[in-house]
Image 1 (cartoon, rainbow over the protein chains, first blue to last red):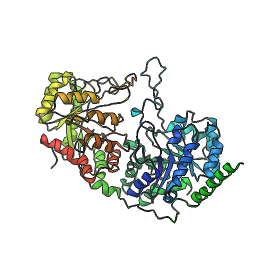
Image 2: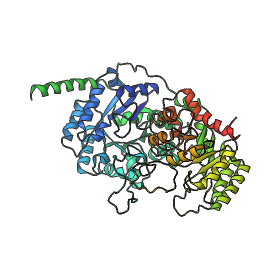
Image 3: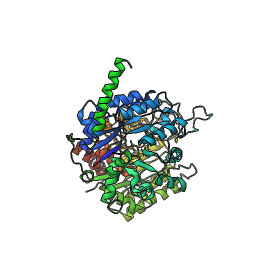
Image 4: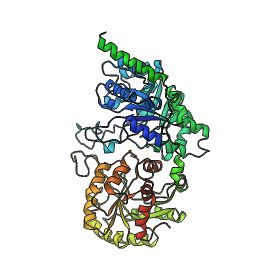
Length: 278
Length: 306
């Protein structure tokens, strides 16, 4: 079984996307032999009231009987916006959502914001994974309307504030709620940790997807399996922003000494099913 | 609760039961239309020349990754990047960088196609270095950010490379503050980086020359790049870089045509292959991008793969 733990429908306001509806995503899944996809609605990043995006996703999923057996919906929750606890409850009990996605950078709150910590604790108590993106798009080609990467108030404009996160930026919430479930996707920047944080990650219920550009060089997937453990990775595409196959190619191109059949099955779907609880 | 809220709540709850009871993967609904897909079989279906790589410290490891992905030949270059701002960019440094490529070619002559680099600010030494590198079997040129490709300093180099039927391959970029739009954003790039507009100007001045615009997936604005380069048939692009966005290949085919695109990785090997396989290109188009287009250009200078 092949399960994509990181995909979207919806729009990116600054660039036209392909395959960004459930119907077109399903066509892509069928073309490349993917059984199941975790899906959430990109529009939830840009709507102030993210629940509108969750309802949009729900309505699209119920428009075709095939969708409910192929997609695993995740809710977009903004824990500093009014009514988020009701929204989360509705998403779990009425809209069939199986996990949560959060966007601290786009929704403009810190990784240790009390509201966010509370959300993570609620998710922990309800058995839901919380998904955090290291980045959504490559900031080098960002639109001038996307989140800033420069300090425009600095005396010299070349004082660049590099706002893309790395794994260390995400660690504070894992330290705060170490018994929650986390899915960390699009590993696009440094995944180096100190000894204490590496030990924490290894102990915690964390899964990384295979979509991000940092899985190369000294950090190939086979090396990362040794460093973090084979239960820590799962196939993810980050599509339709990134291409559909690179994350899968990283898994399937490993030879038998790097990942045996059992390990590959965990990467294809086993680890994802475990953390989602299906 | 009013009637409207009651109805809305009821319909959501009912549908929610359907969703939650119909657990993904456990449904009686057939996975209609899903085909079996063997990605490694698809990878190996196409011959490949990587048109944009650099020699790694561990060449054996580099080739081992290439083998897994069916990359039979790799074009390598070693430009003086001076990321630190403290590196010399003089002729001795250029020569030393080219020697790294020559050593890799000597070790693995069947796998590496070497390209030399220059600093066009040193005119006499550049001509001497071209002659040295060509005599030693190098097949083309890779320029970096010392001088823009449309600078008059480049004219004699472009003319020499055209005589040799070799590519003028340039590191390029295009983002906010670069390439003609939103120039108020100073993003601290090297000021002499070649932009799409610069290459267009050079390509129009020398329509008989062959230009190679590097890594459209290297983090630049690939939509801008493809649109800007569209009208210059003597500019080719490679697909290298770490930003493997979904639509890059299809957009490039639409705007540049299927004959002006080279498969390249810029050492991002999985991204490089994955994004082409995942595109909507036909098998024939993929074969052109992975191999034929670059080989046809190399053939003009007698450096093609048999």
